[in-house]
Length: 310
Image (cartoon, rainbow, N blue to C red; front, side):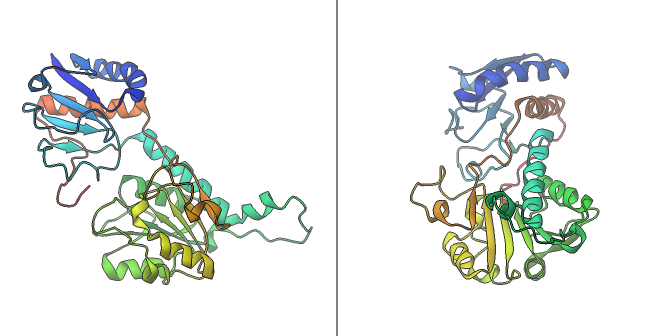
């Protein structure tokens, strides 16, 4: 019998209490699933979220892995008590949700839809809608989510460039990497999508200098991580017209404080960290597969590189 501790927070328990056992059964796993455990040394796996019930992992001396429910692991990689293998969440539901949010907002800005939504008495002037093939989109971050979004946009005929810190290849996407690649990616970013992990290397990657590289009147979408952007530099770029509009789903402090300038800025759209969410059904399938792998002595899926931070 495999002992699994669900340490991902009580609010998530009802959904996962149904989805996880079904996924375990589908894999032929015999599992005891717990919300609490008075014998941490008996726990084989922890299903975890950073706002869950466990902060000190040292009592779980026999745990074979900590299986994170979130795509981001920045709140876990620096925990000195977490010495067990750590996996991040990559699942179909999370990926599909992100593709839909990104595609929807790219099309919104590409077509200039805000003008027609807010102006209820438009002048009936001839308008020639732009074509995707004439719009250059840059996706910063080519992990599972970034690559999926880049390919979805390319399938709509956008001219898509992707950038990552290390070289990658994504079919249908012009891929760049490194410092020189970042500059080349940004100078053509009429619409820029941020989907990088949060690490020391990506802190304030978009700052006064890098924002100045983007074409005047560019659009910015950030469904990745709040600290990727220097808030003050973005506000200055919005005020100057360098950035025409920023649609932001993630922030340095969440919920976004009521007095933050983003709320009142006419060129900012705030969405409340809803770009995508881990879905219990699909996430449970990933968790079950990783436990099956752990029990079979096979490599875990989506194992985190502690040095890289993701």
